[in-house]
Length: 403
Image (cartoon, rainbow, N blue to C red; front, top):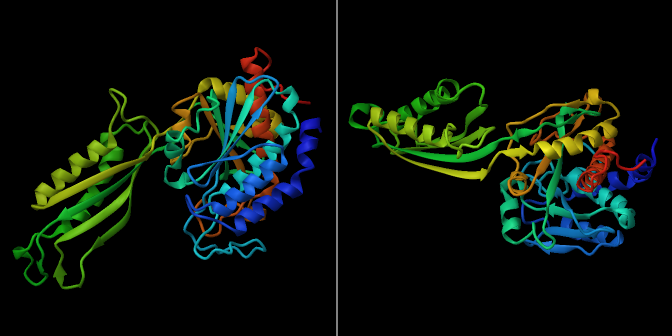
């Protein structure tokens, strides 16, 4: 075992304790006050001077023997409005709120990395900016960026890690290009004319039009857009009517559009525009009116080829073999995209799926849990990733790190 792995191994109980504490006390987006205080306390113990951003976000800057370049290491903090169903000693104490996406582990891993890197301060060939970000689930990154989180010092590159149950423990997912999807959230109001179900000819039925929309929309992702461009349009909510014998005036449909490309580029398909065109056509056929709102939560996460090349050797050192490094992408959304759109960025999936430890439930599931042994790999990946970036920028051997 090399020196870095040995140093990180010494932190195992500490990292697990941190994660379990965060897990037992989950907080929703921009309500992460306890988590922020815990993060600040730990960073101060590392000799750093944490600062608040956007209320519950925390940053800290570690300046090495050289001030530049500057790499941003980011972990998200917020939990989800889910009632936990796990029977574990550190089960959520906050009713209806749960860390069901791994952000508790992300905070613990980045704190561990801050401790290790702080011990290397005098030899670092650049500056590390640690960011503990609130409200990832609802695009908190843009708010932090507006408040200057990418400045003072100016960030040159960004690294994010997401612990990932779809990948087996011991594996890392890494590839260039789009790795997480653009996420658009839509709301459709289908407007008809209410009436009696006994004589429907006197009404304009928005339920029939809504059903046609749900069915017809599937043609967008299978007939209007190439199958080589992953696109998923899903409905998550349908509401209409007050009684079984009443035709309602309107039906509300809500859902998401996810796709692994930038729809704003010339020549690219634009799913929101295609959705609007289809809804208009269907409603006209049924004699209904409609309103369509589409809100962009985040753009696709695009991994920089150069950053992938820099991090790949470090990732192999973490998992021990190139065979445990796999190409991976997801149709989930991630607001790390906002950082990666401004500086070269890389977002890495850290496998934590282990059926024996019941850590193979999907994200956002009330039984979600992780293989805690994989968190040390996350700590190491943050550290080696930063060191590799500094080596690359200084003309050294990327991925060499510390031995």
